[in-house]
Length: 275
Image 1 (cartoon, rainbow, N blue to C red):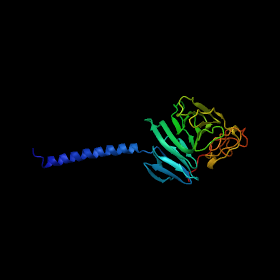
Image 2: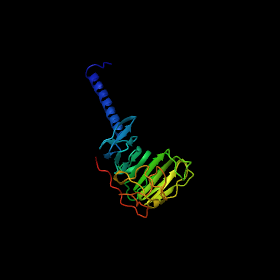
Image 3: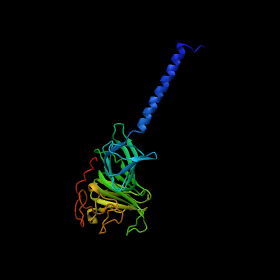
C-alpha cells in the first residue's frame, strides 16, 4: 500500500491531533490536581510555604495547595482563606499543613483536614445550616472536629505540666463559638469530649481527653497579635493548663475575661488585615 502523498499527510495530521488532544486532557488533569485550595489573604511578619520539598517565602495572595506546609516565624502571622471562605489564622512560631480539601460538585466543602505540627491555629469554619460536620484539625495526639464555627487549637511538645509530669506533649482546644468534638486517636478506647462555647480542654500525650471546663475560670492569660492566644501563653493560677498551653484565661481583645476569670466570651477577634 502506498502511504505517500495526501494520505500520508492526513495520517500525520490525525496523529498530531490525537497527541494534542491527549496533551490538553493531561494538562487539564494536572491543573485540577494542582488547583489552589485557597490563598493567603493576610500576612504579618515572616512566614514560608513548603511544597514538594521546596520552601519559598509566603506572600499576600499566594495560592495554597493540598500538601502545603505554612510555617510562621517568631513575629509571623498568616491568614489562609479556603475556597469555601473558611479561614485559618496561623499564629507566631507555628507550622500547619493542609492535608485534605475535598469539594462537592457544587463547590461546597465535602471534607477539609489540616495538621497542626506545632504552635496555634484559629479556625473560623463556615457552615451551612444542616451541613454534616466535615472540618478537622489534627495534631500528633488529638483531633478537633468542628461542630461549630470558631476555635483555637494549640499543640506543644517537649514540655511538662505539673498535673501530668509523665507527659511531654499537649494539645489544647478553646472554643469561641459552637461546639468542637475533641478525641485522641492514639487512645481510641478513650471517649471523645464535646467542648462548647467558652470552654476549653486539653489532651495530654496518649491519655484521655480532659473534661471540658470554663475558659473564663482559668485566670489571667496573655494574648498574641490581633487578640489571639500566643503559643506558650499560660497563667499559673487555678484552672490553668500549664506551660506551653494556649487555653488559659485570655486577657485583652478577643479573649475570655482575664485577671482571675469571671468573664464571658468576648467577640471573635478581628482577622488580620492584608499586610
